[in-house]
Structure formats: C-alpha cells, structure tokens
Length: 365
Figure (cartoon, rainbow, N blue to C red):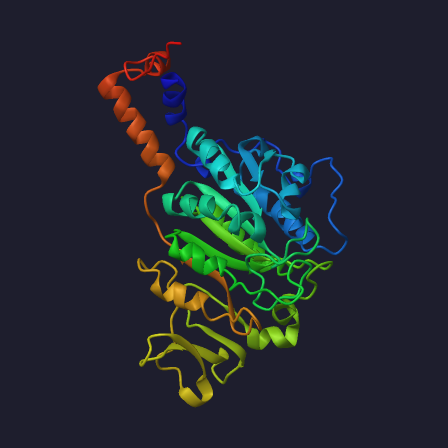
C-alpha cells in the first residue's frame, strides 16, 4: 500500500499541469460518448452538457486524464454522455467518492456533477466537508429548484410556499442558498452561472478549472417539465437587464440600463446603519460608495453579503459570476506531503501487520 501511495505522490501536483493532450487537437466531438442523450426535450441539462464538451478541449488534457463522478438525479446521467472516465455513484456521495479518487490519483482532473436535491439533501454533509477540506475537485451543482427525476417534489432550494406533488398546500421549508452555504463552509472558489448563457458559463468553468482546490459552480438550470420558467426573470432580455448583477473582479458592482458613464444605472452599496448591501440608483445616489468586487479578498464577508441579495421568491437582483477565488492549501497536496513524511520516518507500511496488530480481540466460544 505504501508503494502505491508513494507512486501517487510522484505524480504531478495538479492535473492541469499534466501530460498534454494527444498530438492531434481535440474538439468537442472527442468528448461526446456514443450513448443516446436521454433528458426531456428542452431540458437545461443539454445546454450545460454542450458547454462542458465544448470547453474541455481548452484544458489541454487527454480525455483519459479527466473523470466525471455523479450521484443520483437527472444531472447524474452526465458521465454516460462524456467520452472520459466516469462513475455514476450513489445518492449524495459523489463528493466523497471523488475525494478518494482525487487524493489517490493526483494526475487526474476530477469533476463532480450533482443536483440541488442530490447535493443539498442527503449529500449535504458530504458537500460541505469537501468544500472545507479544499480537495482538488470541480463541483457542478445543477439547481432547478425541484426534484425532476422523481417527478416534481419540492427540493432544498424550492422557494417557501412552493406547490408541488409533495407539498400540495405549499412548502414550509426555508430554501438553501447554495452560494451562501458554500461560502459558509469556507470554500475557496464559489461561482454561479446560468445554463442558457453559454459565454458566461464557459468563462466560469474556465476559472473553476484553473483553481487549485475545490471549486463549486452553481448552475441555474431550467426543468421545463416540473418547474418551467423558474429562472425566466434572469433569462428574459428586458427583465434580466434589471435583475442580473454580473460580478467582475476589480470592477464596481453596477447593473441595469446604462448611465451616462456607460456603466449600469444601478449600484450595490453597503448600508452604513446595518452593514448589509443594498441596491441604489447611481443617477440619484452617485457612484461614491459603490462596492468594487474583490473575489480574492481573504474574508468571505462581502461575497456572502452579495450572495444574499437574491430574493428566493422573485430572484430580483441576482448576482452571477465568481463570488470568491482565494488560494489556500490543497488537501491532496497536504496529504501527500504527510504520507511522504511518514514513509521517511517510519519506512514502508505493513497493512497486514496493522490489521493483525496488538490491539485486537480474540473471541472464545
């Protein structure tokens, strides 16, 4: 066992610094499997799949060095449609299984595909611990605010009062905000994007892939069968102008119809009385005090405050983009260093001796 671990330590510290792709340039077609894609016609998962397949060639990795691991749900069919290695695992446990793979095979680029039900209900505990450990994983959380695979029950992200098959009188639960949850778990990279915005989705995926450690990307994804139009306010061109706040590192948080300076006529400022963030009209308020987004800030306070702007009922004033992107020690590297130190100090381990060691019991009948 020690030999295997030592061999793993000798591999490249990050998958993105690994062996380049084959001599011939890879395209999106190279990442499409021969399996028939079986989601409901019009499902937002198609758009995400296409964006991921189109983006992966940019990583410069052989497809044999990429792995997709999923849990249970509509989104969890993803590995079947990728011409990479993959595993359709069990409900909520994809982050745990991916953690084992990422820490033992540091030469691989490991991606987790999960849904709001899979990740935030039975899988909630596994998700937050992967985030706090900062394992080198990229987690794509498809959020359609409903249970689609089991035919339309409310999920952990459904808004309060949601009428579904399992809540005919309206849901009593307060919904999770996945971005807030991830920031609270000390995730080093947290982002949000939308399935239908191909350019934005691809850019967020690129930044997530470059990040050393755990990157969580929440993707608002439409379920046109059981929760159609859940994010319409963010997709309709006119409504989106006033509702979507596009976060860009180093730029003032402005949105809405253009003001005289060419930037949005609405701005986000900090309320001096409460410390909370609020939206103002810069044509009346002025630009003084408008928050400048810093995704690399050590403290997640401002990022968390931005995540709370979105009202779960109306989604008015919803930030998208990278909320946080900070550098901190990666679990995989720390573990490899610890194992290497243990081998240097104690020599190679003996698993058989450990299992049959002194701390055992003999049962006599």
